[in-house]
Image (cartoon, rainbow, N blue to C red; front, side):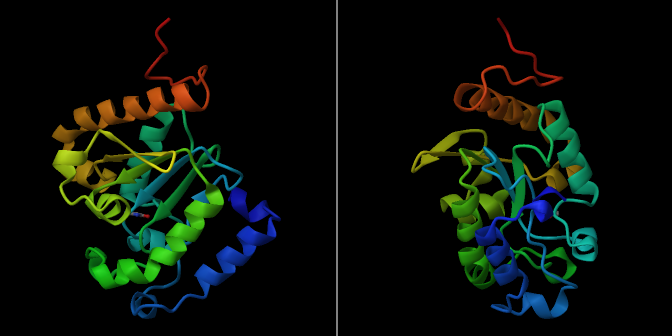
Length: 205
Ligand code: URA
């Protein structure tokens, strides 16, 4: 994992702090804390999910189960990959039992970790995967109303889209998810790299 070769002290301290967290009871039932992974050196793009699932809890890496495999395919189609210019986080760092939605209290307990991570990573674009991430970061509760639109907060562009696990359950939503992904590529080309290549979304000249 790329960030493990990072020798940035602030980031290592943040990691240690989060890995030793016992701010809520989720830690007691989880196998461990899933910090997140990716390119920790000023990644322009951060993806935020809800919380680790079974495989994530076992491997202590985010999005490595079935939803993660779909996320990797989506990233590939858009010309991104999780280790270059991208970082993947979750709202809560420990697996909620039986993959239930994390409670408000659990989200609140993990909030200082998430904000510290975002402050350090300082992305330009944040993609919120599903309603939990959207509610937590934007305070908006209806995914259908807010999905696929840009929300600017302090110079950072947030876009909420379907959670990949929801796409696995509802494949008919994939068309809309692809539209959202194209908006992310457009924004990336606008703000970060006008020449960004996406294998399934070529730039129009
Ligand atoms: N679902 C999430 O929200 N996060 C993960 O890391 C895995 C599945």
